[in-house]
Length: 230
Image (cartoon, rainbow, N blue to C red; front, side, top):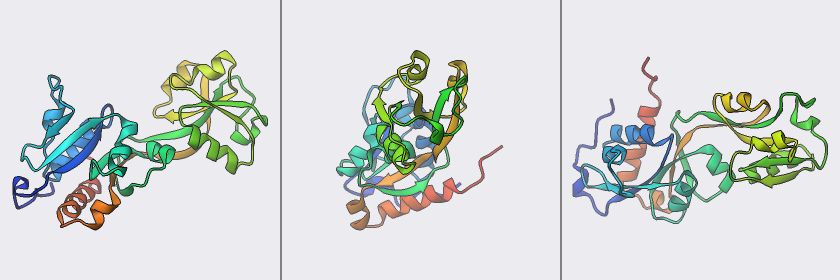
């Protein structure tokens, strides 16, 4: 276990602000910050309805936000640090500093088609076909790199319905276990990139840091490099 800060965080001012994503990344994010001396455990209390939660030491606070909003709060300086998936960073391309690959929240951004489809590589898809995705920037950049013109259709919900209904030939979406694809008669045929949770920071805050941010980042980096307990 990495030791917490020797000096109580409550003696440091102003409080540090950390943007944490609701959902699948939250519990592991809270654990990593606890290992760095910032206890945001109250945010996991089912009875908690606060969106801004102070740390137990009083020297920091966590903003509970949607996954896609984490880099927005960090980029605009309302949070000095945040935890967000690489998929969100790739899609939104906001000016934040990627500091640590935290090693949890693993998944991949993939091209998928109907299992009955004849296509087994992204390059096999017909020119000017439709590809449905929540991640339109990632999809457009990927197919542009293949020099394959496609129409990328933005869907906010279940993109698996695109090929099922015939609205699209393929989708670009996050795949973790692949179970959702399988249950809907789809298969992943190619990966764009692997994604995991990343610790990100506000570049100016890092440059002007008096040592507090650096200490937290280094403790989180050290904890993230340890073997995962069996």
